[in-house]
Image (cartoon, rainbow, N blue to C red; front, side, top):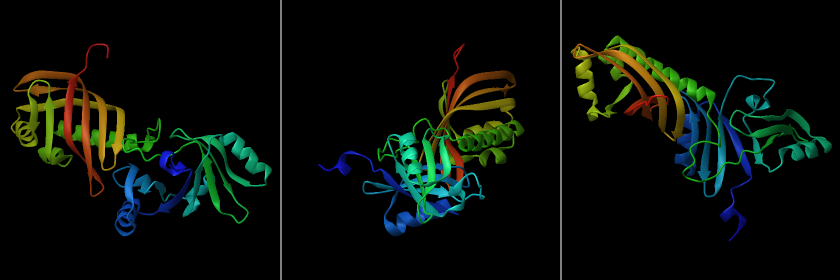
Length: 269
């Protein structure tokens, strides 16, 4: 058994694209890569890893040039995972490497620095080590702020649609086969929920959801929130304090809800 059979690679090419989604689709179709991991919003792939055999290529989204981040001005580079980043940076500095981004902790749990070699090529070295484990959804301890903010906007838009009691706005937020699973009645289909709202059987006058957990699995997102709402059902006041787990599917760059599971929140939880 060789080392590559048991350990992940240490060196990863990094490519930056204007349209990450189109790049992923093309690279998988033309070169046989497979999408292994993505951090994406409704309209942009911020970070992705494509697998081929036991190797990985990283993709990043193009962004506005930022002098503090040399990667924002490069189309490609190399990332290397190392065990002791502090020692590695000291060695590079002693050899005369131009440190263009000093060692620092990142939002996704890595510790990294960037440098240019003797002919100006950009390299980054860090503690984050991607793996090919199929169960991995995100780099360790990563909860991308931009992604949480994007899904919070999606949830806020759904809340606003529900409060408007406009079934057309509500329908725009969910898939044709969306299903609501409640503790009282189990699965309830989209048609029944929209009919109850349209006829006035069900209405809401307040609704909030705050995200507490978010995981991305390719084109599927699982989002757990703490939700509270008040309203009327068949003319009687209703109120709820519950844990809400939504499953989203990305279709043509848009996240739509496929399933919503409601679990009553216990006192003190």
